[in-house]
Length: 113
Length: 118
Image (cartoon, rainbow over all chains, first blue to last red; front, side):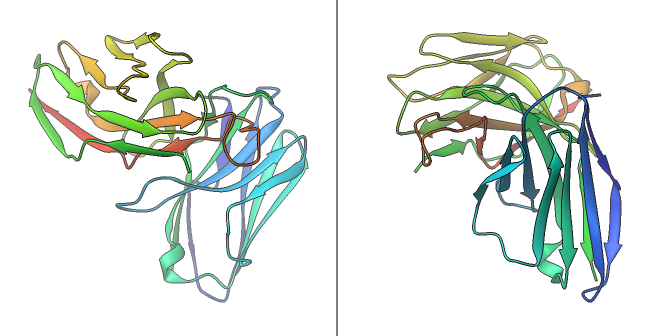
């Protein structure tokens, strides 16, 4: 138990569906992240939020839309995805300072059919 | 930009064998270095870290030393167990990277699959 909880753990969606991934952290951290983990590729940073403000968008397609209503919650809204978007999506959080480790959730295994 | 290169896997060992997983990095500043472990069906867990040159991180029998002269952070364990079977990721956090402040964001290597047999 890392203090970062992601739901759902597994999600299957069609290419025309709209769904959302949820992440919640109970660590009092101020920074939250979305990472994508695909087979045979390094983890890719997608978005960074610091004090609820988006500080980085790593050239992510607009079919992925993040939302951070407060420092404890992070969402990833999905629409019109492609089969190549199937992956493990990992949420992480950290204190708002440099050189600090990130705490990861267990991930959402997304399959786009 | 920053990058991390890990030894290609998979690595297969017998129980009680010695483990080394190589990791080298490139960074513009003075990064912190991390090893994360991912067990089957789970997210990533921090295994150990080192924040400056010559620091040694250690946890659960694993060790890694921050070598600035060789830009390396190799993971070692003297005697592996079946329960160590997992994917291991080397990562860095560079506060002087793009944007000026990392806010803890990490650059990962590609991961090394370790399988330990009884």
